[in-house]
Image 1 (cartoon, rainbow, N blue to C red):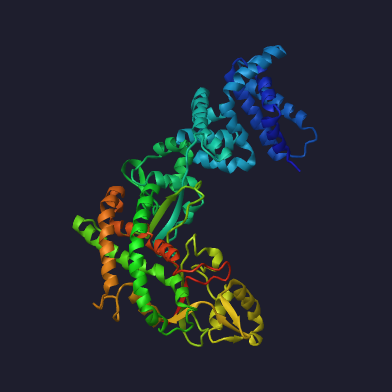
Image 2: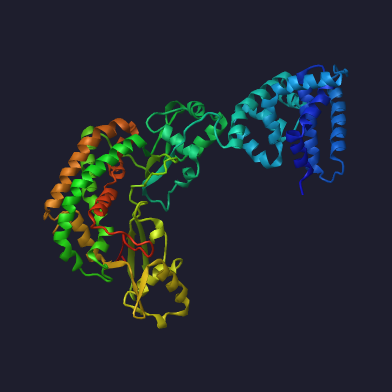
Length: 571
């Protein structure tokens, strides 16, 4: 059942009650300013009364009784007020003339509904003190203007002036909130959080901007040049109030305050034009590098397949869905080292940060946008499923074009207690007889079968995921870095390592000057992170593998390609 207060507000907005009350006030006052004041006093008194009493049989009579009482009080407070008489036509003419000028202010009156009170409070809190006091007394305490003037010890016309200025300051915010867009036709972009580092369990502020398109675009706007809140307000056609609020909500990991009250991005933000340039460089290098990697992998095929596995890969090609993109690391690790050397020559020192974040600008209207960055989620769990104290690490790749979440991807934070079908993968390593499954595990086994994590053969369940001891994972890591010895730095580097070194030098020479010009000075120490993270070699190696045919077409369901688990002794 609609409350009487809501009914009154609806009648103000939709049924002409505002005109009627203003006409009542205008008929009894000498000036339009005084009529506005009386009109506002009547509305305030009605709202206050309705908030205290909802049991009213005749709302219309109730409103006009309050109007008469308010007018009587108004006469007492304003001795120079006298009644004048207007014809109906004259009254309508006067109402239309003044009401047209007061539409701007009426937006605020319509927000007095209790459901919008929190919004008004937030906006008022952002005004300067001289305006805030007037707004609080008028809208929240619902005091008439003479009382406000008395409290603040200022003339009434000063109260009206401050109230009018405050209304103008928050008018854009009200419109923005009601329409969910700015008055200008401003193009807004999205910000993909594509890479981050640091201890996210202790310090993770990504959620502060993930749900706000405006906050993302503030960061985008400040990516290379510092700006004031006033400049941002004008750029996005949003009131100072909301802009100040939004800026203050952005964590320092993303936006940094500088001298002069300006703000500049504190995370790496790669715009579309620069990303396209980096993507082209990634694609061009991947075409040549893939030939070298393929030749190397085919030569190593027997060595790779003969490594000790707990649950062997179903085929060499199956393993390559996970392994081939890893060879981008051989180049990217060298890029980082070369960038560190360059920074040292430039005299740029590393800065301490709680988090390192890289964002990529994307166009939400671009339906063809494909996320080319690598999401390499790790799951680490210490458990005793295999009969001894071991640590399992599950790594899986995710690319929106090939290895999508609906193809059986895991994600960081999963554990075996809350995700029992994942535990079934390891319970079935030696083959688990279907008839011997514990009653508590049957549902998890069914789900694991449905998702393709495990398979059924001759009445037994087996994992579908490649599982290896840590020694095998280490050997595969040495191979991808171009080392045939017992470690990455053993000195036994092969031709693949030389190729990776060559391409790393090419990338640095092409992107170093661009990056130095593009990044603001306080982010130059993140040069290596910038190039490493923006360079999507993993994706383009996978692209070349698909074109070549060494990576086969993936199944629609039960896809565990791109997933690799290793078992370690718990430290």
